[in-house]
Length: 140
Image 1 (cartoon, rainbow, N blue to C red):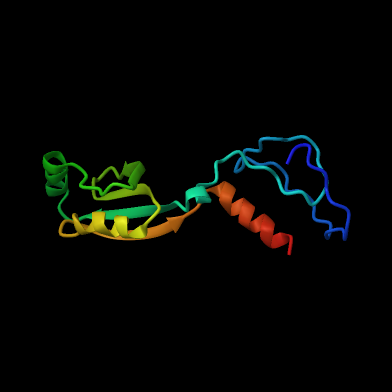
Image 2: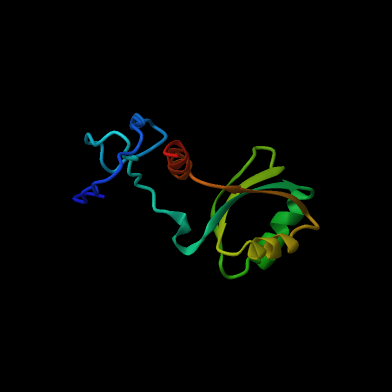
């Protein structure tokens, strides 16, 4: 933290600060003490214990999926957030980033579509969060 002084005591093992790369956006690129983890600009998703999921949807009947979407909407329960999505050019797969504080909401949404779509769900974190976790592991 800026302006916060280190408490005297047993020094930590010396670990060099990782070099800035395109994978991370640092809020402060000024020189700092070795062993100080880089500060990342991404907002932490864990503050409300919200998790992100990459959902891979394999459309069995693409035309029926879109017809239902146009007729009924997404049919998503409150608390399930659609962050972004990409559809392959053949309109056979959708790669969707979803966010929720309760995995059961994701399951509820998928139940509305599982007669037309096969789902794969992967909990995901941002590259910044991955860097934070790895940095913490290196400090042990």
